[in-house]
Image 1 (cartoon, one colour):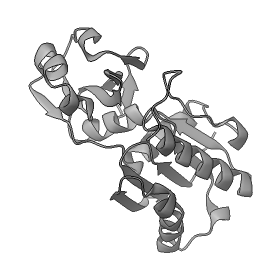
Image 2 (tube, helix red, strand yellow):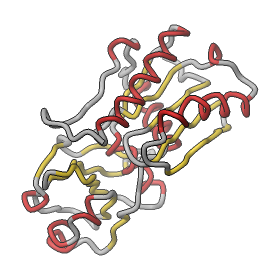
Image 3 (spheres, one colour):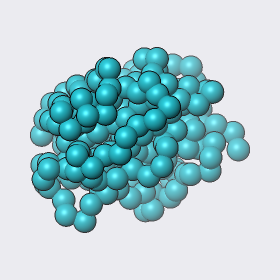
Length: 225
């Protein structure tokens, strides 16, 4: 199956509202750290990247959706926007993990092994571990989970880099206990990195219809934010 030539990614699971359009070898981006402003920002961002590229919505071949985990409201915004846009033009959706998106950013900065932790509140973190494959794409090792930081298992076969807000919320329980020499606690999911994972997801046959693009919260109890 040929790769889509035009892909639009939307990621709103964190304080960052992020949209990226990949058209051939060009990428058009809008990314702003603006807590609680995603509803206002996201559709104008979509319109802006399409305008920058000289394209219309019907030119998009596939949509990439940051599926979570993350802030409940933020995850829902991305899901709702992508479902609506994809349905309107009859295009498939590629849901990708918001944890993996952060890992991809670290991989592109040179990391080989990345542990990602988002502060999930309630004394827990959203947790995932990833390695860079031969194509420079972050690949999950095991299952993503929601877990108490003190219960995160030891890491092996590093060196490892830690990324995400969990490392600033729980520095002793995570970075110090796990022996990480470097952390990137300010790392937020970026739609540019979501595009990379979306291309891989397309290659792996993970595209779904708009109605089947669902959020991933990792816990039954959600903290609305």
